[in-house]
Image 1 (cartoon, one colour):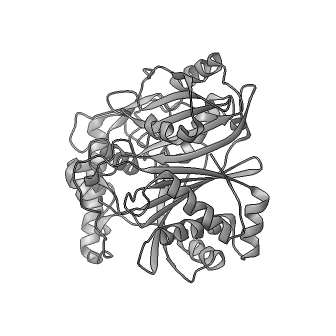
Image 2: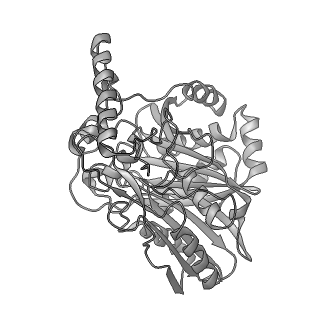
Amino acid sequence: MRQRRLSVVDEIFLRTHRSLGTPIALQGLWRTADRIDPALLHAVHAALRTGPLGRRVVRPRVPGARRFWQRNTRAYPLALTDRPIRTAELMEWADAQGADLDPEFGPGWRLSAVALDDGGSLASLTCSHALADGRALVLAADDALGGTSLTSGDSSGPPAAPGRAGISAAAPDSDWADARMQWSIVLRGTAGALRRGIPDQPPRVSSRVGTDAPVLTHSAVLQCSVADWDGAATAQSGTANSLFIGLTANMLWASGFQPDTIDASLPVDTRDEPRVDNDLSMTDIAIDRADTPSTIREKARAAYERRMSSPGGMPEELLQVIPDRWAYALSKGAGERDILCSNIGTLPATLRTLGPHRCLGVAARAIHPGLTAAHLPRTRLSGYLCRIGDDYLLSLVSLDPVGIESSTALTDLAHQALLESGLRARPW
């Protein structure tokens, strides 16, 4: 039986669960106009338990071999809160749904729902970033809701194709064989890098220094019609994506960020077929105060043709054969910039309803459970954009407790940036 091995990207996110970096969980949110039938949620929960999120990480017995995935149908019970909360508190509730996720020793995902005082409900699907990236979480939800059927990520599945960012290479049958393959790649690649001369690394801006004191992030979700958003982008000779990036940068400047240039990290979906993996790579652009959606469009187009490289020109597999703390030190902050702009894309039509319940909106984003001041990243503001039906959902997470002191302040910054582009949006 072939084992599906973790990729380099999987292991980067796995290390964050061991306090080596900023903790990250992915979250999908469904807001409905009426109360969700608990029986429906139990059925979705059962489908998720046996679906592609139902897996855990297993350590190999041989040094140098990659960790691998094993089926895991154990899950947290469906968490239902019948007592309504105020709609003003819904984002605070959503932020709390990422606690205690563990992709290695415990369940790595959670489904929960709460009643709202406007007569509706909010449902949340949260998973460790080690299990899936944003697009993968969407695919897993689509699978559980009866959309595109996916093969579960278990150890009996076929090995992934080699040479793709964010997924495992074809894995040998045994830990010994995998270790031999990994060490061979690392030694050949390192020798080649040394012959060429290790390239200079770009200057790295260190993470903010802090203590183990907990840090509260601030969140906002705003909903805007596709027609209005696309119209504003076209009016500025940009795209929906370049407008999104520009808006996020303008919010950071409006919060008091002083430098005239903002570096933006842009995740790139690299999957060539629907599958639940961390199938992504990263690129970046520099945004100046004079930039517009038009100029950002050109910068992003060029950036998508290149990717951030492994440390020092060494093979990225090096990060999988050395101790976790060394790997963390080598890759620390590599994908972090001043802002993160993740365009998750168009969501499947299946997600527009939960059974008979019409969704007022569906949002996708990342949250940071258990974040401390010592693990604040360079990133100060993260933005996530997705489209469902006739609406765009803009999700924002602030990691700058000084510049953006509350969720209300974040929502106000978003409203002002949108108004400057001739847009109005409905906050959740």
